[in-house]
Image 1 (cartoon, rainbow, N blue to C red):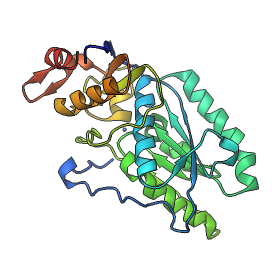
Image 2 (cartoon, one colour):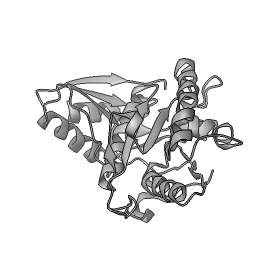
Image 3 (cartoon, one colour):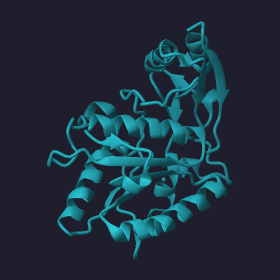
Image 4 (cartoon, rainbow, N blue to C red):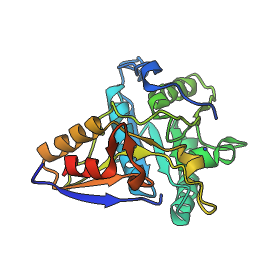
Length: 260
């Protein structure tokens, strides 16, 4: 780990409680529709570094489930927008992108999904009426995303419209068992915790990302070692309030020492 630089950041980037990790069923390894075709997914990310990290988690979940990632929105079978409910500019951009997807969706089958904080905070607005959104998944529902996309694809191929939602908040989900699929680069994000307990008057984070929970430190250290081994020179630890990191007898100071 000596070759990597550590950077700390608090990005400024709400259902039923999910089961603890030990009770969560594993994601099947071949969820993409079983007609021999690999469906192409295009992902656009808006907002903070935590959203960038979540997109890396989503990439890993989708490719493990048999989907193919593409940079070409025009030929994609699925377009996912990973959204932010904090930054107004990112919020406005998402609605603009959805409007520009209307003509494409009229011409052919296209699954449109909204992920992240806007999906959690504005779910009624995004799914009601003549909305083109087929899949709506909040920050704690990414494990269900491959199955919901598959359902939407199969529905469209049958000439049906079925919207898929996973917008429940969790007290347990940290995605600790998922290795993010990153693009090549020098800086790697690692989320060490999710959610927030502060409930500041001006902030919606506790309502969009849930209550605060910290990741297992050994999982964080393994992820940092993986980044260093793959040539990353800078590691950024992410959390809404990293100073409140607690995992058994680990605090943030001990975690920094172990990662650095």
